[in-house]
Image (cartoon, rainbow, N blue to C red; front, top):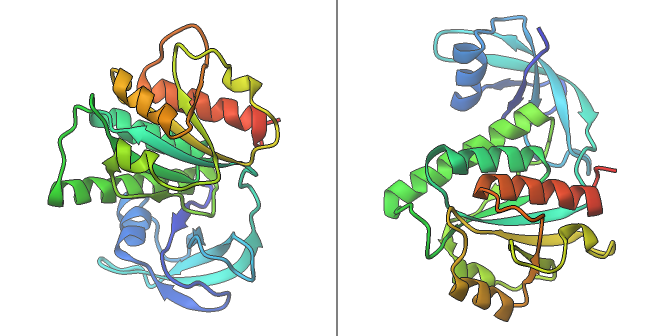
Length: 248
């Protein structure tokens, strides 16, 4: 069995022992049913000597409620794209949003902001919204464990589309629009930061599209067909990586 990658949100150092967090314990012991002596790979998303990477480790003292890990060799991992993508994603229903976040992280997105839009069918606020955001961040962490990433993309607090459009940024601003005249594959090759807007189910309203243009977002096209919101986001990120990022 290949030793699993597990995110451990605490300082890690070669030669030291750590007690696994509740989330790491649940994943390694309750889900994967690992025992003392089993090898695992730990990462914490923090810079180690100015590099991101992962540690080999061995489980010790595995009990019913806790387990330790002896930290071994550190290996630098350099698999981040040169393209920084901030995804503004209109919140979609049910598992569609979860799927979008999971796969966008696998494809290399760096930051995700869930957006409330005119056609957003999800009504969340207060404690329910905070729980949902926490769930989304856990999905992002799981996607990093699976995909081999050692940096953890941030799921920012959900805000209105208007608030997001008004944020100051030096990134190239793109709005995926099925009636745009410019192809996403025709973008100049000089950009390394992208702010990508994807509407929810049903897309953005005409007013929201006009508002995005007011804030200097460029309409771009993927092709002649209308895509579902989750398909649109992942296809656009893939196209951007092919055009400007690390998929060559």
